[in-house]
Amino acid sequence: MTPQEAEAILQEYFAPWIKRLGLRVEEVGERHALVRLPWSGELAREGGGLCGQAMMAAADTATVIAISSARGGFVPMTTVQQSTTFQRPVAGKDVLIDVRVTKLGRTLAFSEITLRAEGGDDTVAHATTVYAIQG
Image (cartoon, rainbow, N blue to C red; front, side, top):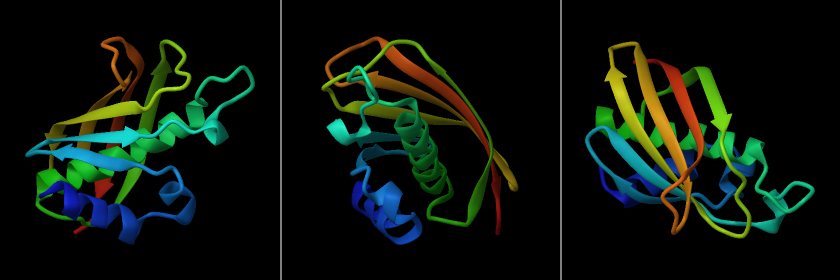
């Protein structure tokens, strides 16, 4: 799968409010995806930090891209579980979402997601997910 094919998945299968996050697929591979969440003041909470809800939605969406890449294309899937820890605030910077599919089965997929502010090495949030795969 190419980043352009992954971008097409974003446009075709996601709700309008997810599209308004402005996510951009930077890279896809056999079992991973790197997706950018552009900074927006509209996603900031009081105090100027990027809200956790936006990061969780972006991580969830990026995982669909990684699983689609691992399977060779999009198939319907549903989030079964997502656990997120927030480790430091982000303000004024894009967030890079690195998804690694750790197990890909016939009906379930598991992933680990690391979120970092652009230009930094420190993790700002970490998530794990489980997806039920149809078809």
